[in-house]
Length: 326
Image (cartoon, rainbow, N blue to C red):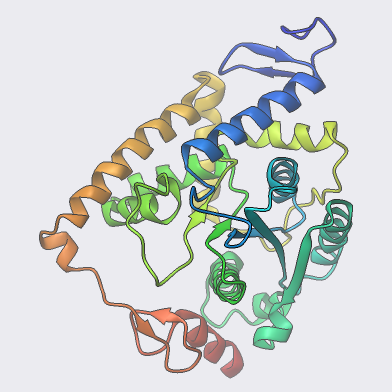
């Protein structure tokens, strides 16, 4: 199998486009799509200057997606004085897993000379995920605890850095799964919120001071191509799966979309194209008012930690109380 562009040996066949690509042209293809997404989302504030730069926090876990994202953003913006970047790594306290991935993040940050901070659940919350999984006071999946704690720390440190944007390494597969889950759950409000939170171009979103806006520059690129990209560029990457990962519902959706893609190449792209258009329409409808908009809860500050919440005590603090009592 030869590369369509140069005739060298191909390492990948993108069935959705029919393209056969060698390592070099796969690299170029991935980087081109990420750069296009950066432009289309208006990621860089047009008013940013060296004296008042756009500040970005990148969630760097050490896995393939976040490593690829950090490397590409550094390629494009690493020497741009209009941008300041901070790579943030979160240690959940998972023995034999996160320590290795943190080694990868440290190596990458040193190679790129990018500012890098590591924070841990143990230091911030006095818990470790291994212990939380063992006690499981809420009788729920490990990812449910971890997602709450991770979001809190990302928000906290993005605010501390005075960040304008929070960037994560969600790929096409991740986003197609989330879109399908929102459809199947009939959660139109979440579809609308998704647009303003992380999908829409920054000049089309409804801004809020409650949270640092997110962006997902990898969301046009399939997971497999990101893994190949890291291999081609010999990037320091931790490829192991989290031993506590057990999101059963998302796993079912993942399998369904994988089968659809096998039988109908391009299904993931079609899902996201339709979802993004519908999310924009839903966001516009919710902004205009009506019964649905009136149901939106007001956000205040958690009386314990000060995080934004619609209740007196935020979800994170309630989970920590439950874990301490177990």
